[in-house]
Amino acid sequence: MIFWEIFKMAANALRINRMRTILTLLGVIIGVSSVITIISALDGLEQSIRSELEFLGPSTFIVTKMGILRSDEEFFEALKRKPLKYEYVKAIEEGCDDCVKVAASSNAFNSEIKYRNNKLRNVLVRGSEYNIIDIIDFELGQGRFYTAEEDLTRRHVAFIGTTIQDELFPGIDPIGKSLKINNVKYEVIGIAKKKGSSFGNDADRVVFVPYHTFVKQFGHPRGRMSIFVKANSVEDVPDAMDQVRNVLRARRHVPYDKKDDFGMVTADAVMAVLNDITKFLRMGLVGVSSIALIVGGIIIMNIMMVSVTERTREIGIRKSIGARQKDILMQFLYESLIQSLGGGAIGIAIGVILGKILISLMNFDMTPSVSAIIVGLTISTGVGLFFGIYPAMKAAKMQPVKALSYE
Image (cartoon, rainbow, N blue to C red; front, top):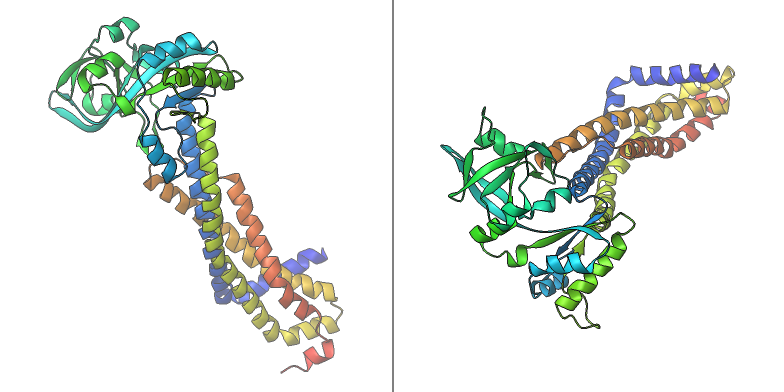
């Protein structure tokens, strides 16, 4: 009960000095909200990128000309590499025992699509083999995907995303209708299930066409071609990658003492690089924003020192009628913690909201991170204790006689 009474006294003291309390809260709110905004935004960025990479699946990897590059030197060196060839797909199928699906794919950006008077610009057209839908996470919504025969015979058929359906065929069923890709006619045969926005792009603003049809219209992809490979299982991915590496090194005549002149990308590898980047980014940004928290803590200490000085006679009276040193210490610590935790809670709410706004501007999705909330509460509690302990100890150590005679 004694602690509850001390808590009520502390809360009442803060209520009496409302303006001072509000200004103190403001300093903590600014500090905590800036930290939480950065943590929430970075967490949202990682969540969105992770969800975008999930289309690969845990047993899938991609062979590309460039791969994952970590420096300017690696980038300029990768530019000199020979492009991948379509013949590698067959070679991988024959030389990789742990590979169950292999498909070539290439992209054409900024394509124009038309249906009657409706027109869409800057659409992604993906030329992929018929089995790509068994490798990546793109599910069938309506109709069907194109077949191996349609791919090999270069049929002009298209499998579209839901954004294409909504914007190009509003209110009508697009199955069986003809659209034009850069003025070349294609028949719509299927629609993918909605995926939503991720990685800063609308994942449903896409058109799949057969790979050989794509090559016929857009030419050989050269450096833009990728090879998607699905292993037997997650456990077989390392062995499958080694087998693919051996096949490609032999096909591309890479000497035994030279590095691979191609890259292999997995979702885990991309996330590992991303984590390395965001780790240092997080440390730097949080470090800078923590300056605002230190300022908020200094404000708490300053206000508490003023409060102790103003209430010297009150402290003397309380001690003279039996208040113990730890009771005075607890009262002023409670005042500091109420301000820091109150400001921390408000700062967390503001930080999460600002983080969501920041992420939404970049077309990412974000859910409040539990770790960010825990960090915010821990920081605000630590600030209250660290910067409130000295004024509280000063008040607790006052001699009753001196305190009562203070003017």
